[in-house]
Length: 573
Image (cartoon, rainbow, N blue to C red; front, side, top):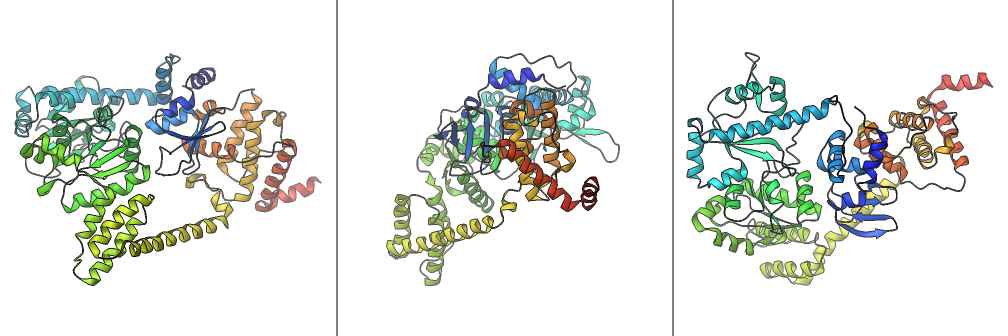
């Protein structure tokens, strides 16, 4: 059901957007009523994410996301509109108006989370029954303590096709709900459903709010895949979550320790390294990196030393770098993973490794060094070229001095020569950026296009005027005067026409068009575009004349694309 607008307005008033966003974003500078910080939705080093205290809106000039406080929580927490409302209401100590049990999305989400919680309880309880003895044997072999079994809620998926299905069905969950939650699969032969996790040690995946949103199952014997993970569901997105994040974000450590496997995470927590986390069946994603950056300023990569682990390390460095988080790399000797190293050498030796962790530049230079024979001139030249490219990305002159000096010592080439090569690569990069900027400047209509292809404008010249109409009506609703010689069908862009129809209708009904009241009527991408057009400059000197000019432009562009309408105009005259 729709929430009362009076409630949404009060909700927004009691959740000041600067305070809410400040829980996720470090504001770096202030300009008037705007606060600026690094965008939590895309990687950047220069702050382009702004929050306007007076207007109670946010907007990123880099990725063009924007909206009010409800939109922000929807985006940052990956919530539906109703869930975001509940989130903010809880934060402000407000009671949500009775929804009468009619909102299917809220009900469905609650049912799926409840099913996951019951599944986690079922798996965990099986550890104390004969059905869980294989998992218990595995837990004991890996040296996992009872405390860690309880802390992580570990469980056993029995070697059965329907044990979980039967249990949850008896508790009133339908096959369709279990399918939606990713707990079962449908048989192509019988049409029935069967348990997705079988004969595995089960790790519940818990989000930052404490909800069981998915599961990861580790095989107990031989076979593939080693880990089986829940696919994306209405309550779980693997790109946005990490195993152990619910615990690690509360760790007193000032960093996250990123490892490959769930058992590594558990072993590290058991040894006192409580900031350990792991991706869930995927390489590190931009969304995961942004999640990490919300809570801590440093990430230490401790992936396996094999080729796949090295590739994962290099890819993760590039993703984490873009968020502005400090990146360090841990080299575990003898090709061991963290769990093996802890068992053979102990927590003290692991702490010593942590104390010697390398910067990502040190790691990459050492990796490059291993690919070349510096006794051979061609290899030395090739190494220098690659090293200078890498050093060209450094922003600090001190870092360039330190790492450039290291490369100089390795190759026998002077530091000044290396700096000259670095400058050449920097100049090339700046020239390319300038060319790209100038190229974009020659295509203003392309530059103003929305990122979302579904919202692209076929007639950008008309769209500029259409945005102007919307901007003026949002700034000054009295300009509408109950009528305008403009209909939604006159708009060349369907989205802008629909926005005009909604905004016009609300003005007619005497309703306010604020970020909180418009949020349920538009998607997050559409709200981003609305906030974008509000951020465009507008001359307030003669808004009535500006509105008339915009309308004339829209009508003129319509006549160009609709000759029949043009003839009708002539006949009317």
